[in-house]
Amino acid sequence: MLFNSIQFAIFLPIVFMLYWFVFDRFISKSKWQLRLQNAFVVVASYVFYGWWDWRFLLLIAFTSFCSWGSGMLMQRVDSQQFDLKLMGVGNSLEINKLQKHKKLIATANIVLNLLILAVFKYYDFFVTEFAQLFHISTEGLLLKVILPVGISFYTFQALSYSIDVYRGKIEPTKDIVAFFAFISFFPQLVAGPIERATNLLPQFLKKREFDYDTAVDGMRQILWGLFKKIVVADNCAVYVDQVFSTYTEQTGSTLLLAAIFFTFQIYGDFSGYSDIAIGTAKLFGIKLMRNFNVPYFSRDIAEFWRRWHISLTTWFRDYVYIPLGGSRVSKAKVVRNTFVIFLLSGFWHGANWTFIAWGAYHAILFLPLILTGKNRKYTNQVAEGRILPTFKEAGQMLLTFFLAVIGWIIFRAESIGMAWEYFRGMMQFGTLRSSYRFFILPEMWPTNLFIVIMLVVEWIQRDKELGFAIGNWHFVVRWLMYSIVVSLIVFEGGQSVPFVYFQF
Image (cartoon, rainbow, N blue to C red; front, side):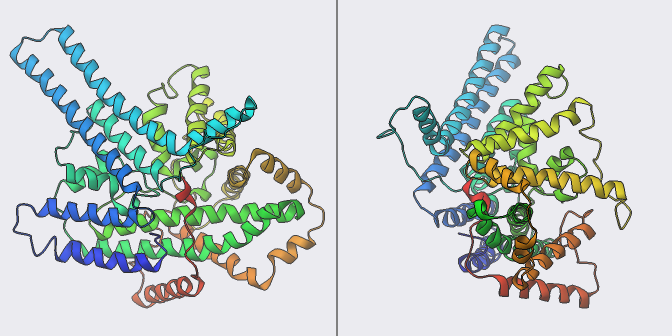
């Protein structure tokens, strides 16, 4: 079920009304109130996810059960250790044996989850590449299975639970219903944010209260997310797809402009989804982590990665980079660690060499900053306390944006060869006439205007967590803005276009 579909527009109000006015108000005196409300979240989430293909519900249920079970088994081991220490009969050998048992349980669940992800997402890729390398036929070797929507997202969410329980950062929950709700919560199920058990799970273990102001903020965030997706991203996609599909026939300037449009398309698409997800969660009294923080206003590539897909970058930082030693090791290992997380991040996006190359590209850009200790030079908002940036800040933002554009070409290309040919074509500017005629046509004016509106609004609101935080504006201006945005969404919205990150 797509956020930008009629089905979801019907689904969300029904779920909202049942959630608050049936499972909260009418059964508020029942001791089972919270569990029934969580059970309803699970049912609604499974309906939402099963809308694509009900068979994949078995997969997410299996992942949820195994991860919950591993937590319970680890808790049993911890209890045994505690009992031995309490009775004073345990020696170091017995304690170490139990600790190894706990590690084995966590490792088994992590390997199981990664194996499921590998089979569905990467098996055919590796078999095909191996067969091409050794000139072997793939006949009968490929699985040719459909990639389950959002499998990378909920798998990483399940992994975070097992790792955090093993590390002792969170107590494993006995409440299997709350745990299933944590894994399958429909707003962020298929494209994030990738939530941590330490943040999201406790919210399903306590009673939620309806808060009008929070719900209104959620509606504003949903509205802004729909604007970025339907009005900006989907309009950009029309021209991006046209140019990328005929890139060998286009001039260099046209190719460059199409790459810039894709840069705004993927941002509007993915950050739009995150806004809708976070806003929808607020309607149900759930707070999700922020996933984007105006990344195109970054002054270097390190700042860009602190602001882009925050839930994924922090996941790799906490569960891969820091355990490898982070930046507190030798320079050689810092280089290794940096490449590991960026290559893994690229490969997480899909089974294609372009994603690995995209990750390597950003690792190369990131290395000089981290080796010189300048990777955290910019942790505040640009032009803080000022209306406009300085010339230096403007130049830094333009350079960082251009570097991101180059990376997005690799990301968007279907193969390394296509990316290389695209770059070659982009270097041959030739005449600007064709690109001028293509991008300054009257039908392009609205898309250019929509991009400007998005950038202006987010620049003004760059120090706010909510990209459309206009609650304190005069009510006339506020409702005028609502009317304009809603009108643009309605008139620009046509066929529901899937979100880019659904393929991951």
